[in-house]
Amino acid sequence: MTSPAHPADAHPYLRAANAGVRHHARALAPSDTGPPPAADRLHLDVLHAHLTTVLRLLDRLAETTRPPHPAAGRHLAAAHTRLWQAASEVHAAFHLLPSSLTAGTTASTCRPERLPEGPPVLTICQRHLAAGHVVRRKTTPTDLRAHTTACAR
Image 1 (cartoon, rainbow, N blue to C red):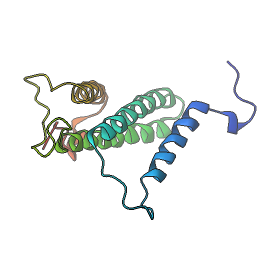
Image 2: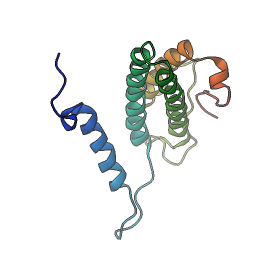
Image 3: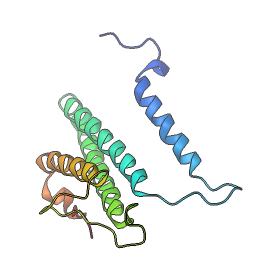
Image 4: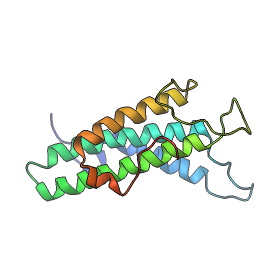
C-alpha cells in the first residue's frame, strides 16, 4: 500500500466524516429563522454511533502507535478514555429524553434485566455495552473512576 502523494489526499473518508459533523454543527447554530430544534433520541443515537466509531479508531491508533512511540500512544489512550466518557454521557442523555412513542412521559432507562423497547433504544444500548466491554478491558478502574458509566442516572 502506498501513501498519498499529498497530505490533502490522505484519509478521504475521515475528512468526509469531519465535513459532515461540521455541516451538522452549522445547521444547529442559531439563525434568524429561530432557535434550532432540541436534540431528540434519534439525533443522539446517530451521534453516539459516530462517537463509538471514532472510539474504535482511536483504540486501534493507540495500539499501533504505542510500540514505536510510547508517549504518543499514552496520549491516544487518554483520548480514548475521554471519548468513552463523552459517549457515555450521550447515552445517558438519550435515556433522559422522552421517547417519540411516549411523548411527554418519563424517559425510559436502560434496564439490563430486560430488553429495551426496540430501535433506537435497543441499538444504542447494545452499541454502548459493546463499547463498554472494550473500554473496561483496556482501561484501569482508576482511569474511569472520575466518571460513572451507568446506563441512566
